[in-house]
Image (tube, rainbow, N blue to C red; front, side, top):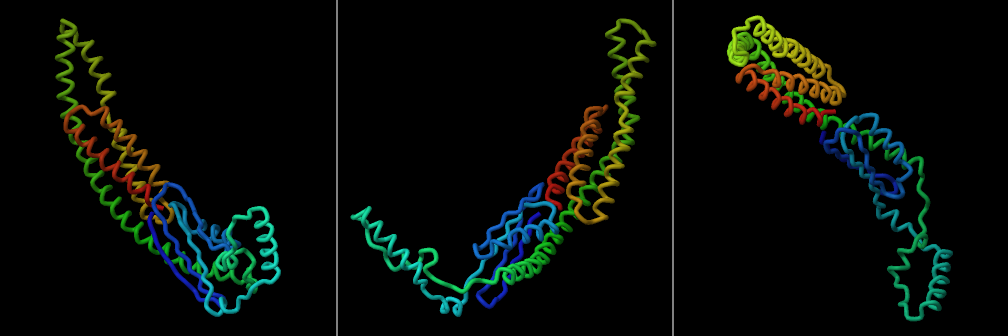
Length: 284
């Protein structure tokens, strides 16, 4: 299921921002893009998301921008500068033609700008506190989408029930017509009116063409889909399984179809089931 939420918080050292978004996926895949100074909060953030989300490709982005006061308090690290100067002199001896370091290069060298260390515990707590708020909004957005998908599935269930109900009254007439046609062909093939042989062949055909069991199972599966939708919660995987079972029964119904109208109903039923399968794979 798709979803999106974002939030931010002002801390003593800067501004913390979190963005969570997801796209459809049959399984849970959490990707985290976190600022280096916040990397220690990643395991807890993953656990927090996994506790609330069951399916989807989830992208979590956590950024931290130092405020002006923190930037003003920064100073140069003499030890790092001296080490960089020594390395530059050594590099010049090895590569006489190389250009000299620029101020921009010096300031970007790791450790040259000295800042007071961040309180990792406090920062981690701030990340998780904000993440919980953003996650609540994110889950609410996914729940709204899930409700819309549930309505779409329910509408297709109604259509499936109508197709299943159309098949049952067609069976006696379709079987009688097909049996009469089959009996005539058998008599022509046998070259005689061997009624006993014809009746035996018709009995075998009637057993193979009987779809009462398939119709019963289809109705039972549709009832289970409705109960699952009404129950709420993380139902996507169960609905996916039920859609596969519905498709299996619809395939059998189509293969046993004894008339054009029954075959047409079976094919329309298969189309509705396939549409439903596409939807439930997006439901958590």
